Image 1 (tube, rainbow, N blue to C red):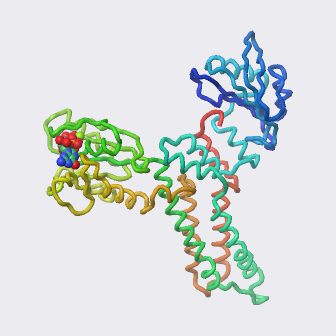
Image 2 (cartoon, rainbow, N blue to C red):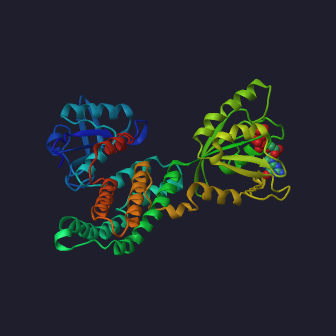
Image 3 (cartoon, rainbow, N blue to C red):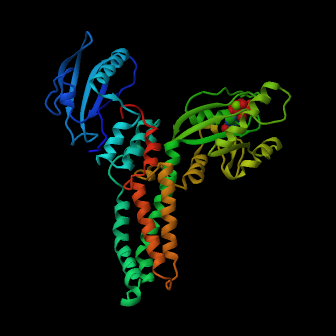
Length: 434
Ligand SMILES: Nc1nc2c(ncn2[C@@H]2O[C@H](COP(=O)(O)OP(=O)(O)OP(=O)(O)O)[C@@H](O)[C@H]2O)c(=O)[nH]1
Ligand SMILES: [Mg+2]
C-alpha cells in the first residue's frame, strides 16, 4: 500500500437532487474510523444502516470492500443515501471530522494505480469512458478499459532475446568473438515494426474519434451548408432558405453520423458584403477554421469556387476538402453530395480517408487513443524503424541503445516507469469520487 495514504472521501454522484447519492470513502482501517457513524456490514454484502450525526438520521445502504481486494486496494466504504445535495455535503463534512478528507479529482483511481490494482492505460481509458458523448466513443473507451493490449506483451516478448544478444555483444564482443547478427534481427523484428505502424494508424484514428471530428462547413451563400449541417446532425438545427445570407452566426452541434462522432460548425456564407451583421458573422469564421480538423468547402456543381472563399481558405489549404453540392441537379466529379436527398456516401468515404487514414470506427476498437499514447507510439515506431535500417556492420552499441530505448518507451506507455507528471496530467481531467 502507498505509504502516505490517508483516508479520503468524495461524492461519487453529482451534487444534484436525485433518487440516490453515493458517497465513497477509501483508506486504511475504515471499520474503526467510521465506527462512530456506522457499524460496517460483512464484506461485499449490502445492508441498510442508520447513519446518525449532528442530529441527522439518514437511512442508507452501506457496502464495505476491505482492502486489498477493492478498487483502490485500500478499504472502501460506499454510503448510498437519499440524493439530496445538502445531505451529502453535511455527510462529507462529518466524515472530515472523523478523519477522512475530501479527495482530489481522480484520487481514487490514482490510488488504484499506485497500489497496482489498475494500469495507466486502463485509467486513461476510464477518463474517456466517463467523458464519452456518442455510441462510438463509448465503445472505443470500453474496449480500451480492459486488459493490456496483446501487441504490447508481444512486443516485449520479441524484444527481450535481442536485448540480451545486443548486451552480450557490447560487453564481450571483442574478446569472445560474440557479434550481433543485424540481418537476423531485421528479419525477426520486421513483423513487430509493421505492427507498430498499424497500431499507430489505429491510435491516431481512435484519438480523433474520441475527440470528435471537428468539421467546419464553409462556402459562398446558398452553397448548401446549412442543409448539409442538418442532414449530418439528423435534426433541423439551422435555418435553410433559398435566400442567400440566411446563416449569419456560427452554430455548433455535436452528433454521431454513421458511426462518426462529429463536432459540426455551420458558418455564414463568405462573400463581399456591406451588411454589418453578415460581416460580423464572417469575421467569426477565422478562429473556427483554425481549430477545425477538416474544412468542408461546399461548391455547387457546375460552379467554380468563389474568390472570397478561396482567399479565406488559403492559409488552411492542407485541411480543405472540396465538396460538390446539389449533385442531384448535375453530374460532378470528386466528392459530390445531394444533402437534401440524404445522398452523402461520397462524403462518408472522404471523411474516413482524410481523417481516419481510411479506417472504419470499428477497426479502431482496442486501439490506444490519448495524445500521450499516440506520441509514445510515434517514438516507438521511429525507434524500431531506425533499428531495422542499421547497417549490418555497425557497432553493437547502436542496436543495443535503440532496443533499450524501445523497451523504455513501452514502459512509459504502460506507466510502469511511474512518471509523476503523466499522472498529474491524467488525474486533473477526472471527476471527484472516481
Ligand atoms: N436541389 C437541391 N437543393 C439543395 C440542396 N441542398 C440545399 N439545397 C437548397 O439550396 C438552398 C440554400 O441552402 P442552404 O442550406 O440554406 O445554403 P447555405 O449555404 O446554408 O446558405 P447561407 O446560410 O445563406 O450561406 C435552399 O433552398 C436549399 O433547399 C441539394 O442537395 N439539392
Ligand atoms: Mg446557411
